[in-house]
Amino acid sequence: MSAFKERFYSKGYYKGLALEPRFKDVAKIFMGFKGEKLLYVGCGDGDITLLLKEKMGAKEAYGVELAEEAVIAANEKGIKAYRLDIECE
Image 1 (tube, one colour):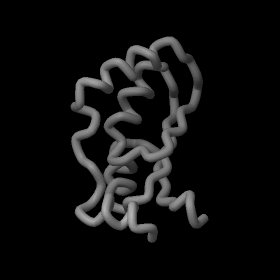
Image 2: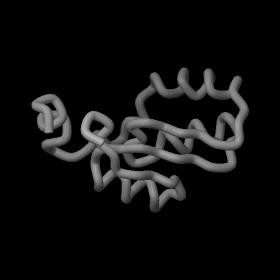
Image 3: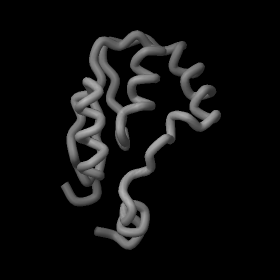
Image 4: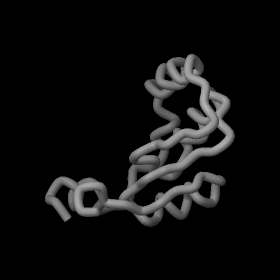
């Protein structure tokens, strides 16, 4: 694992990101997109993925995430999330 990833994930994935005000702006942008499926790379625990899925009216959401704990949380929310290190796999 790279030094950056080791530092970033040493205490687990970042929880609570969807609550940050900047994601209201991202959600507004996604309201202009329509699609059946959404893929979120770096989906974390799935909160933002669900928000974007709702805004664009997608029926399915997929996620890719490095932190296993986050993948489990996203799957529990109905996201088809997979653990993947895109730098190595």
